[in-house]
Image (cartoon, rainbow, N blue to C red; front, side, top):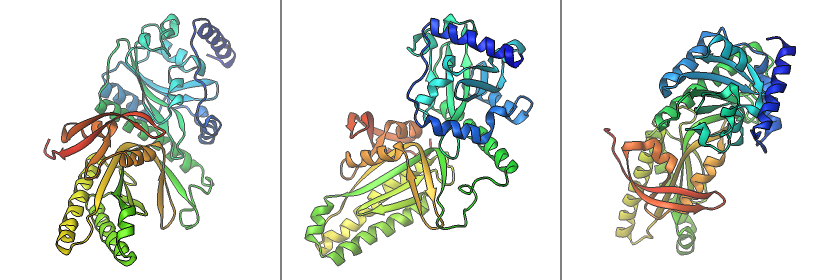
Length: 399
């Protein structure tokens, strides 16, 4: 299809979409910067169709989710381009090669760009209930897409699967899509960097200690630990004893973090923060950080036994853990992390109870049968709304 015909065809699709009530996504976070990222990578000008490595990923996505079709779609300002697919015939491939973004399903991933977009039944979802009225989407009932998030933290599109029957996907299938989406982005960025020796300095000046390099991680587990009643301890203890005791705890936590291959981020006052799954990706990052949490509680209990004998104050630890995406920034000698997942982990810690490990539903999903949970129910996390949370009672390592 030549450019003129394609333009006319897209105009027709836009009119049809508007007439049947398809609503374009609005208020997209950081849309201007996101479009700059698409432009920077030159991804709209690239042809994937003959590259086996991309084609195999779409095929693998269909196998993992037991779906009929798999696609890699890139979202521009006004269009969606399908770069490669598995399962479409020649006619379907030609039609979907480029369509208006405002009548695409993938556009809705931009509303929550760090989360997968799962629609069990298009006909039952308010966003997509009218799509079946268009010939282009006739017979499509199921959609699952994982965002393609670059190292700068922007979504450039999706790796998605579709099917003609409504269905559900489980946690492991969604994780499988996420991992494949990360691989797609990794290949895109590697090719870009290989072809651009003069890539901007934010990616290349790693030897300059004043330059902060950042990287997006699509999954990680974040732990916050805090001593309950620290203000009271400050009032009761001599400053030297207080600092010495705090150092004993933090040095112990450091050793335990290394044991579990977990990255310490920082300490803030009496708060200890660490992350599993960065910089080295770990499949079992949620399990490892929860195992660390139990070790930390046990370590504090051991110190408290000594304090009882010596008639010293008892320290009480409270822990919160959440699993989700984040951005990590580092210089030659420091590390920090940002993102909503970090804030949620902090809220879980502050709303928990002493001596307990307070985890989110997402962390519980990652643990699966390896965790023994005590449901806390739905709680209101400050500035984050209502969340279903659990207290982690134990871990089962052999299942």
